[in-house]
Length: 472
Image (tube, rainbow, N blue to C red; front, side, top):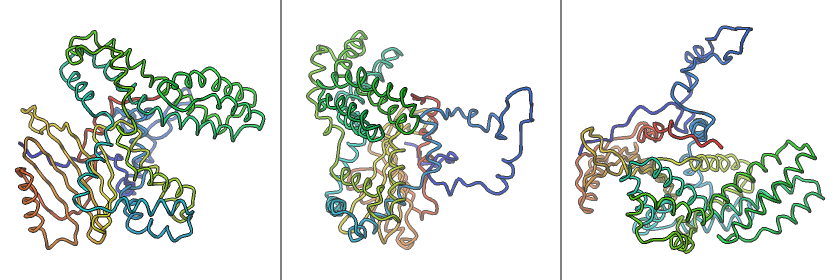
C-alpha cells in the first residue's frame, strides 16, 4: 500500500479561514490595475479582471449552489474556534448570565448528555457517523452495486433520480414543519383581513403522514400559493414577504417530489434494466412502497437528542437571549453549520462536542470511505480520515489516516505543549493499532505548526466542481 498522506496545496478561497486568504499589499495593487479598455460602443467588463481570473477559467459556476458554497466558505469564521470557545467555558457561563429558564435548562441538559467515558465515546461516535449519512442500509448498498456494475447512463440517471426523491420523502416531516413556519412568517407580514383568510386556508393542512402529503401538496399548489400570488399582485408588496413565498414554493415542490408513489413508479421503470432487476428479483413496486412506508425516517436519519438541544441553544443565542456579546458567536455558528449542509459533499463530516472524563473536547471528522489508493497502477480503494480535536488545557491535534486491507498510514500533528512526549505518542499509537489488529505501514508524528486544511486533505471536494450545478 502506497503512502497517500500527501497534503496537496490547498485551493485558495476554499477553507473558511479569512485570515489565510488575505491579499498582500502588492497583490492588491496589481489587482487594481484596469485590464479592459473603455469602449463606448459596447458593454465590457468593469472589474479589472481577465476571463481567466474571473473564475470561469477554473470552471466554477458561481450562480450554482456549489459556487456559492465555495465563496461562502472564504468569508465564514472557523467553526472549530467558535465551538471550542463556547464548549470550554462560554456555555457554562451563560447559565448564570440571566438567560431564559428554558435555555438554561437546555444548556445544563446538553452538558449532561456530552459527559461520557472513553468506552461510551465509542458508541457516541458510531451514532454520529451513522447520522452523517442518510443513504445507508441494505437498500443503498444494493443501489451502489447497481451503479458500479452498470455502464448504462439511463440506469444511473434513474437511480440518482430515485435517491433525490428518497431524500425529499425522508425529509417530509421536516419540510411540512418548514412550510408551516414560512406560512406563519408570511401571515405576520400581511394585512389583518388577508392574514385571517390565509389562516383559514392553512387550517386545511393536515399533520404530516405519507398519506396526507398528497392532499397537503394539493392544497398548497391549488389554494394557498395562488392566494399569495394574488395578494402580491394586489398590494405590490416586493419586500421580505416575496422572498418567503419563493421559499414556500421551493419547499412545496420538494414535498411533491417526495411522494412514496413516485418512488414506486421510479422503481417500476428501473426494473426494465436487467442489472437492476437482478438485484431486486421477485420484488413488486407495491412491495417496495410498503417497505418504504414502514421505515422510521427520524430514526433512520440518525437524529441524536444532543443535536436537538444544541439547535435550541443556538436559536436562543441568535435571538440574543444569551447576551448581546455572545450573539455574534451563535450567528456565526449557525452560518457555518448551514453552509456545510448546503451541498452534497463527496466526504462525510461530523462534529463531536464531548466532555471526556470531565475534560471538554471538540472534534471534527471528515471521512472518505471510497478513497483511491494513490497508486496509479492499483484499483484498490480504502478509507481516508482527517480528524481534528481540541482538548481543553492540552491543545489542538490533527490526524490524517488511510486504511486499506488491515493496514494503516498515519500522520499526527500534536500541540506544542506535548513537545517532550513525541516518543511516547508514537509508542502508544503503535500499541493501540496492534491491540486492534492493524498493521502500521507508515507513521509520522510531529509538532503541528499550521492546521491541515480540509481542501488540502480532500482535494476532490473542489475538483468535482464542474459536475455540480443545482441552481433552482
